[in-house]
Amino acid sequence: MVEKVSLPLTIKTDLNEYRKRLGVGRIVLAFIISLLLWVRFGFLVWLISVIVIAAIIFVIINLQGRRKLTVTGEGLTYSGFLGGRRLVSYADIENATVFVQYVDWNFGAMPRLFIVKKDGTSFVSLIGLFWGIEGFDKLISALQAKKIDVQFSSDQVTSRALALQFPKLLPLYERRPGIIVGITLLVLVVIIAALAAFAAMNG
Image (tube, rainbow, N blue to C red; front, side, top):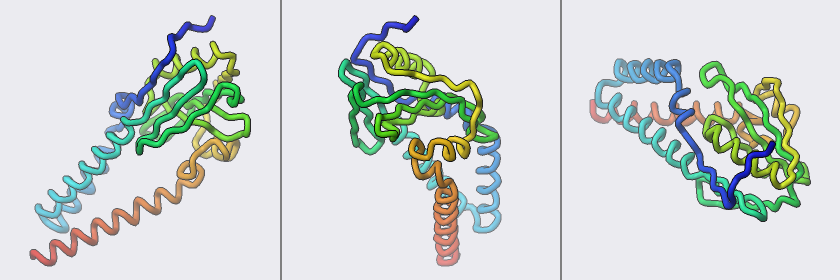
């Protein structure tokens, strides 16, 4: 039986799960890197690096928190973290599919919902790391009430498997994770080089 959901319904990002799953591993790694910076460049450079990293994390979390999905009687409106909006009517939705996605050793597995348009592209992709389960349930009920075909896959899949099977549904950074790794390493190199130069000028 489909749960009745009152419309309009606005589903916002819920970062509680992300904070819980951030994990000891990532915290320990950040602590080790900060200690290396302290040993190599001294207290001042270490302090600046900690402030910069904390500021970056703060900005990312706040940007993620701006996203929302609004469900109305006519269709869906997705608002991104930079303020952009896109709309789709129910008539243009082909189906919705829920997967259990394995993210990594630290974040583990969580639900992933794709809403697919009739042209085969993804209208929106929501992952349980940033969206609450309660919001997922309400969205699924609203879609089913509008006669949208919602499919459930019980098999656990990886990001790579999803990218290979559904290349049109995933954003570029998930289809080509090497790009993100490369950019991250480049940013780290630039930051470390800047901190080293700062330490040399004040040494």
